[in-house]
Length: 174
Image (tube, rainbow, N blue to C red; front, side, top):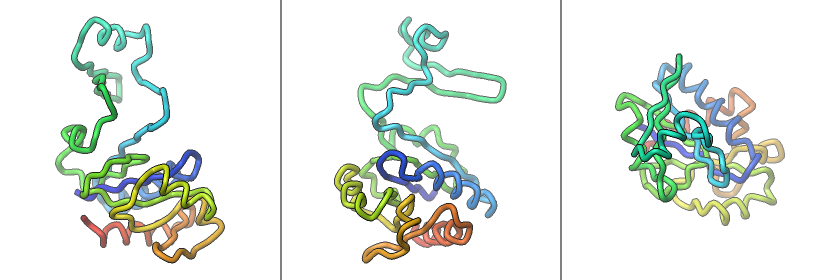
């Protein structure tokens, strides 16, 4: 399985890029999954007062929520989960797992850095701390520049760039 993480600050184009890559890999016939990591968010699927919250509040170790066309697994944790903790939920036949915002040092992860502008790139590296297995840059920065000294730059709103980034990912299996 190829594991890719798109890392960047808020509103830099992560979701746009994830969506474009999912469409590209699905067009190639690959079983593709995603993980959304919400670093700063207080979002929870487990809303206070609702049934799943009440189950947790009563002491359940985990809750599985079943809707008409949906399944969700809810388990409270003391800290942010790491790759090795949630991989058990990823189907074994998944060919590519695209993670949005996953900041995890696991060496299996291919990293793509997103930034709003060339001026914010250094801050992105500093705040997000990603240094290893970085293969490319993308995000809103790609509207301003296609050049960088260390990494190729792709614009995920341009179909040819999405194909190029997908090819680069496929060629950089960790």
